Image 1: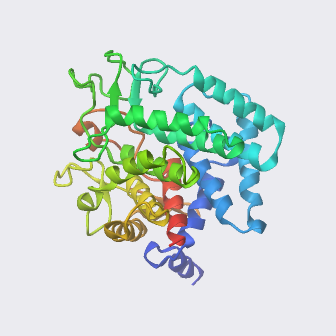
Image 2 (image 1 turned 180 degrees about the vertical axis):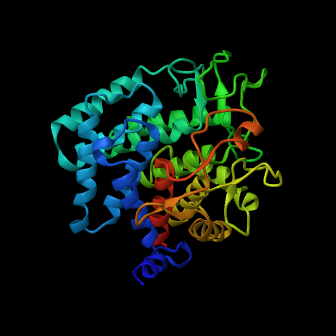
Image 3 (image 1 turned 120 degrees about the horizontal axis):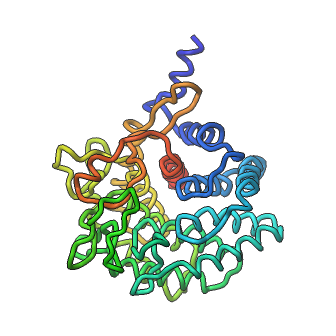
Length: 374
């Protein structure tokens, strides 16, 4: 009888918002206990979802998240750095703690990370390179930078951090976004050197444009989440507000059309839904739902078609992309593209379809929290 009650409680089809708490617990207790935190981008995204939870919870429930963040930063303090975007990403938690606790050690580290960032290689148009070994722009970079830069702005109220974000969004957009579709390809190679990162397909860059060829779902999801978080944070009278809002509107405008109307999911390759090798990917689905709901709440997006599209996404991930963890009373996301670099269509189609991950848990939690604000 107890087992039946458990199944009923944690059946995705019957869940209200209990699934958010389950993902949170799984993330903190199993996926990444604070004392095992690793200074990396996927883990950084999970940290950001904990900050979202900290902000959403009543005062009596905040301490558990604050303690987690303190421990995670304690165990990585000596190895922390901002030498490339994926490293800088975790730094947003240092900055958050500097703002919340006022402790000098966090402020010191926050400033050291920014000094590291300023030394990161730039591409020919000033964009910050995703990797230090070569000069490439990746969509992913924008979200990794935004977590840190927005926290630095919240801490200092110094406009230079918003100016830097605006410059980087523009530099990336001009090389990666196609205004005809609004969607972004995954990468652009600035130095015309086919660098072997042991993850991407060598030769992914077009010989003429040096751009990659595909609209990868999560790459566009990173951009959408970054833009709405930026727009929520900057002043209403910011000189950059109109440009950020235009980027958001253009990015999202075709997505309702590309969404699978039965499952609410978007695809690994966004514009190849009719290809049987393609698969429906849940992390980008959560990211797009989050961006749409927040864009509506901020008064930037019209309710339709985005509210209906976000509702489909929210209900779809609850029904199709949550599963019970084998050994424990937790739910975790599934239907997630495992760590994905840059390649051709077949490369994306053949990425492992995995469960869990820091970015999977985080994107689901952030969608769920934003949905509660409707």
